[in-house]
Amino acid sequence: MSLPPLVEPAAELTVDEVRRYSRHLIIPDVGMDGQKRLKNAKVLCVGAGGLGSPGLMYMAAAGVGTLGIVEFDEVDESNLQRQVIHSQADIGKSKAQSAKETVQGINPLVNVILHEERLEAENVMDIFAQYDLIVDGTDNFATRYLVNDAAVLLNKPYIWGSIYRFDGQASVFWSEHGPCYRCLYPEPPPPGMVPSCAEGGVLGVLCASVGSIQVNEAIKLLAGIGDPLVGRLMIYDALEMQYRQVKVRKDPDCAVCGENPTVTELIDYEAFCGVVSEEAQEAAAGSTITPKQLKEWIDGDEKIEIIDVREPNEYEIVSIPGSRLIPKNEFLMGNALQDLPQDRRIVLNCKTGVRSAEVLAVLKSAGFADAVHVGGGVIGWVNQIEPEKPVY
Image (cartoon, rainbow, N blue to C red; front, side, top):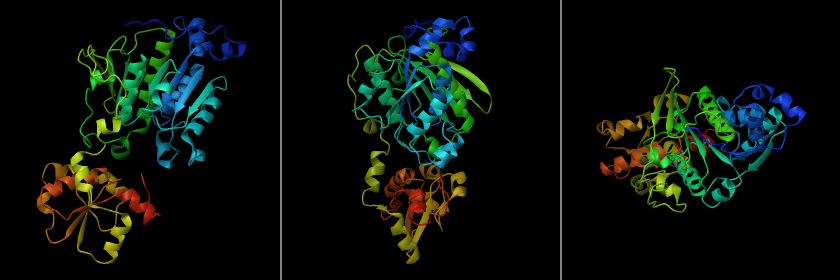
């Protein structure tokens, strides 16, 4: 569907702006009017990571007049494989500050506003109210539902993107003209069911592919051109080099944008999405040890069996000495239980402690009452015990 322009045009373009944006100006569908609208636009990018990097850089290059950045994290070396807005020199620096410097290096005419804080129910409405359009570059379900609900309550359009390994998705959600994110995904997946990029990985260049789709949709909405991805889900398979579309219809029973909404204000999104299941939380209570405790057990020749529940490619990067690899899925399917020793205490570990807590719940229910897991996982082990080892 075609939609009217999201913003009014600015009064004029300067000579410098005409020179800079000349390749836009000679496109009939954009022209002077469209570029003036981009200049007058205020767009908020949630996150300056994998998707935020190409999003911010190309929106800056395109001449979006005001760019807001919500980001609280710092640049880490593992970010550089895909977060191209940051460089080696930015390691340890605020991602928001690093992104701002890159944006202004690309286009000093852009006004950059930083929100160096975690996006939460307490601040999202005030932040979103300042912008015409939201571009969502988040990588966790709690923030995605928060962004969606705030956008619906404020009647703001937002452009969603998602990446994992070789697969990407993108759509435009605007409850006034079509479905919202909850119409597509009414409920979050069960805790631990869908690995994050930090657990499963992502092809770096996939960020550019999906991020550029998001910017393309932003320009179309702001300038009022083309057919935006409202009511359509774009799915990209980088391995097969295939794009396909799925129609998404507005759900009349949607909890937030339906005919009789049950979500009329922001909720507790961490609880709604359940980062760790209730079973895992109960199992971990009183059965969580620190990396230092594990080191003491190893040095004291305690009768323990250290089981690493990550995937083989993760195990190859770094592992706790003496640990044995049995991926989480083997426990969920029940295949691994018969191979566990009965005469030693089972000590589980994963990357950060989330997956091992889920497996711990399985072991507890199977009768391994004294099993424990390592809080903080192998990352905690490296940070506290073997800092010379790599992390990921």
